[in-house]
Image 1 (tube, rainbow, N blue to C red):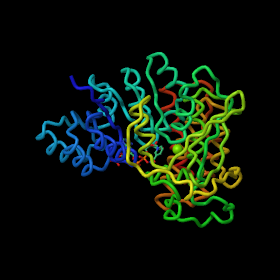
Image 2: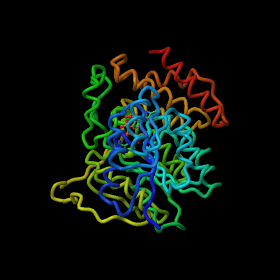
Image 3: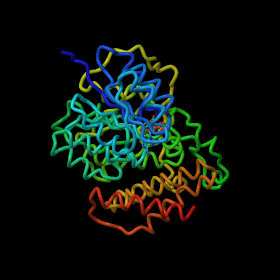
Length: 384
Ligand code: NDP
Ligand code: MG
C-alpha cells in the first residue's frame, strides 16, 4: 500500500498552488496529487493535470469546461466544472490533505465541506478564517480536524509553539514587511499606480494579496486569522514592521521568554511544513547568511496612513458579521483598484464606508455570512 500523502490543491494555478506543486514534484516519494482546481487559467490547469495525473480536476469557470474536459477525460482524468463541483471534490475518500489556496470568500464553502468530511486542512486562504473563524474552528474541533497554517507568519507561530502545549501564549508579534510604501504618508499615496502597488519588496504573490500587503490589509486579515488559529484575544496580538522579512513572527510566553522563527523569505517552507508536520523535509534551498543581514530592524505600523489595519482591528473587536463585511468590501475595492477604477487611498475609504452601511449582526451562520458578503459587495460596488 502506498504511504504517499494524497493531496487536493484548491487553486493550483495560483501563486501558492504552483509553489505547492513544486514541493510535490521535488518529493515524489512523499506526495501524490489527487485533485487540482482552477478558475480561469485552463491552459495551466491542463498542463498541471497532464504532468501530475490527478484523479480529478475542477475548473470553476464553466466556459473553459469543454476544452479542459476533452483533453483530460481522454487521459482518464475526471473533469468537472462549477462551484458545486469544487465543494464536492474535497470529499473524495482517498484525500489525506486539502490545501486551500483559493483567494477570498470563494474558499469558504469548500473548506467547510472538507472539514465536515474529516479532511486535514493546510490553510492558505486566510479570508475563510477572517469571515467565519468561529464557525470553522468550532467545526474543526468537533470533527477532530487539524488546520495547519500555510501563511508564513502563522506557520512561524505554529513552529514556535510546537512542544509548548502546556505553556499558554502570553502574546504574539506578527511581523509585517511594511510593503512597498512603508514610511510614506497619506499625501504621498494619492497618485499610487497599480504597477507600484504590485511591486512587493520581499515576496512574489497573487495580485490581491500583493495589494493587501501594500495597504496593510493583509496584516489586518492575518491578525484576525491568528485570533482564530491560536485562540487569542486582541491584546495578545501585536503587529511589528520588520522590513527584512527574516523573522516571520514571534511568540512571547508567560515567563517573558520569546521564540522567533527565522529564515529567508520563501513560501515553499511554510507550505511544506503544513504538508509534513511534525516532520521536516531535507531541502537544498538557499540558507540564511547573517553577513548579508547585518541589521534586522523593527518599527511601529502607521495606522493613520495604512487605515486598513485599524479597520481590521475594529472589525475583530466588534466581531459578528463585521469581519465578513470588511473582507467583502476589500475584495471589491481591491478589484476596482486593479482595474484602475479607484485610487489607492480609496480602497480603505470604501472599506470603511461599507462597514458603516451594512446591517450588523452579532451572531452569524454560514447562510447569514453568504447574505452579508453579497450585501457588502453590492454596497461597495455602488460606492465605486
Ligand atoms: P492567486 O491569485 O495567485 O491564486 C488564486 C487561485 O484561486 C488561482 O488558482 C485561481 O484560479 C483560483 N481562484 C480565484 N478565484 C476563484 C474563484 N472565485 N473560484 C475558484 N477558484 C478561484 O492567489 P495566491 O496564491 O497569492 O493566494 C491564495 C491564498 O493564499 C489567498 O487567500 C492569500 O491571501 C493566501 N496567501 C498567499 C501567499 C502568497 O505568497 N501568494 C502568502 C500567504 C497567504 P485561476 O488562476 O485559474 O483563475
Ligand atoms: Mg502572511
